[in-house]
Image (cartoon, rainbow, N blue to C red):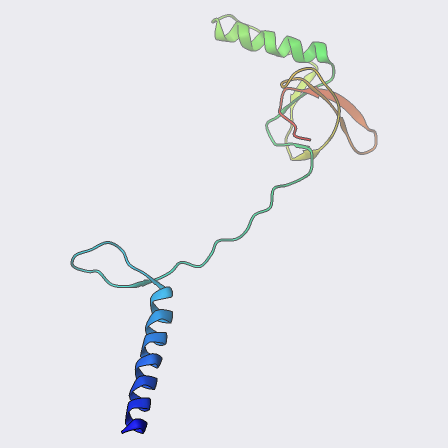
Length: 130
């Protein structure tokens, strides 16, 4: 009788372990008809933040701080319904460009240096994180 009891306990224990491991792999979607177990979705890719200082496409780069101020004045004039030309010294950035921050005058005025021959400096209204 002891062998039969030990075998029964072993089978019940194995069933409990299998049941617990199977329920950990399945998620249920609500109640009612059609309540079928669905496998858990695979984890998504882990994205790391880009640590480089950069200007993204569409950011504005001006040669001088005065050009950047003229750009800001032109935007304000356009919002008031007036015609205002864009300053000649400002251009949009077309591709992601790495930069080095040289100076800041508030959050929306940052002096940056662009690498490469020749090295260029300019001012942007984009937020460049340190």
